[in-house]
Image 1 (cartoon, helix red, strand yellow):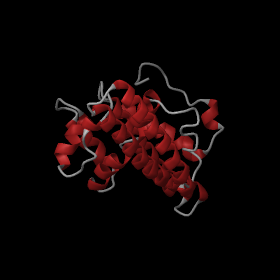
Image 2: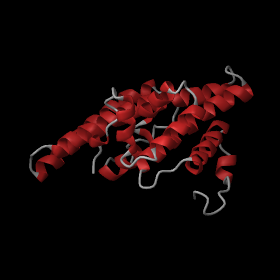
Image 3: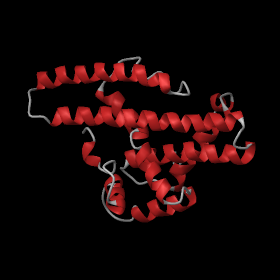
Length: 209
């Protein structure tokens, strides 16, 4: 709640897997460390990265790199990269369709074709995943609202990891960079692109709104 109320760790988290608990705590702590008003894609994308990478670092430190819990966290990061690329391609395909100068009914027909193709692709993709975290994707059907909600958290993971890499793979160095960037007006995703110049991922123009 960004400091408005106390945020307890709920029982379902305590009963779950340790990597998930660590990830959630670090995710929410990120929001209390840096939060840019009106920039949900940035806020959730950053917190998603810090939660996953931070959990992996924490478990490596406390349990060692070869521990099963550490390995579980590492596999979760690998799956996130795969899912992020898949989701970005899907959302970009939809954005191109919606920008096309065709009629409404044609767009609906095209959207259903994209949805069907995406589910077929995911059916193959999930065989390469190491965890079951993303297996529920699309089980209740696909629609714009569902995909945009997923996109807030997962679409830009590879983008944020690029910044993390360029900051020496250091969360400690990355956070001040974003705090400084947030002082300037404008979309944070676009500003990240201007700061690094060379990545097509750094564009909010692909978003579906």
